[in-house]
Length: 447
Image 1 (cartoon, rainbow, N blue to C red):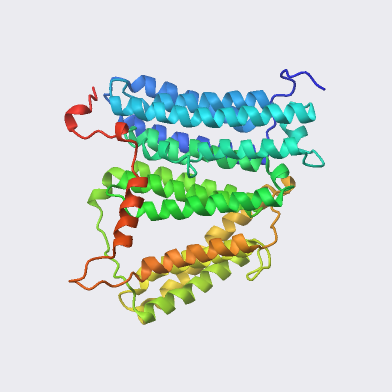
Image 2: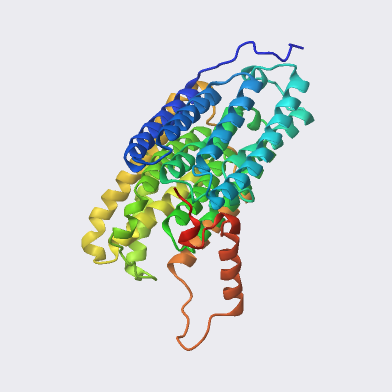
């Protein structure tokens, strides 16, 4: 058994390089925005100090090969994130949000420390790369992977560890951007880093799929109920992290990395542009759509899913878990085309077909690019389809159709009690902690 001391601290592989590039790009964007956004603020220099330290600690985390170094960098990164969340220490709501996040991250840190302790006790190794090449999964290693999964869930705000994220919206916009586009991806990175071990347990992969689908569906539902932009974005992040977990559980880890990259860049843009959202012109999409528009959207969805399958190197109607990604691409492309087809379906159909085809090529090409770049790591291993995968797809499809074709209510007839109770329950469940909400402008204390 090797001593539990630093001996081979770093391992920079293709996963590390991908995450480093993403973090560096988002850090530059957020820093450039904050340079103007926080100009004149009394804590202006401190913000950039904390941001620089945060980016450095994340770089350390994604390149660590020693179990203790990864755990230490993980804890330091989260501590720095909490410090940025409590940007104004005199603001009681910000302090409450920081305490809630600290408790959540504490649970994750305990899970991670316990998992790493079990790995060391079982293998006698401190090198992550050595641990990953264990020929079989012992019961102790399987328990370690479960604890590791808990740590990933707390970091990525997966249900039921989501409330800290919904309660962090009083952070300054640059902090929200680096949080939703950077640090929250830590759970996905953790699963992908230990993917060779997870791939040895189909049961555990299926559990990750169920957890991911649950979080994705809840986040999407809650997003529709929110009254402001930042809460919508927070619920959207929860949903996207859930789908990233689904891709990990499907054995398609490079696809999950591609999703993290796209989500990180897009969510950073959405948060940094959230201040202008109130000035945007909104298109009120008519629901339900006409039958012609709906059928045309489905045709566009088929085109988008086919182009996704071809550009990503997948079989369109595969008998393994890549089929789940193709169906999700079909639903996404159909929803993308539907608003374009509402005004004049037949006249706009050619353009919608081209647009969804390009959408499929763009997303599928990014998945193929990441898969090619990470090919030496052998992390793209589709699993056999099972009932949980099919049930998840059916739930997504039914949720989409229920959004498109809501039940019509008579003007005089009130909504059923079960619907009202369900709405109130969902709305309450999606709210931040009361102590993190500032109810009066005099309570901001933002000096």
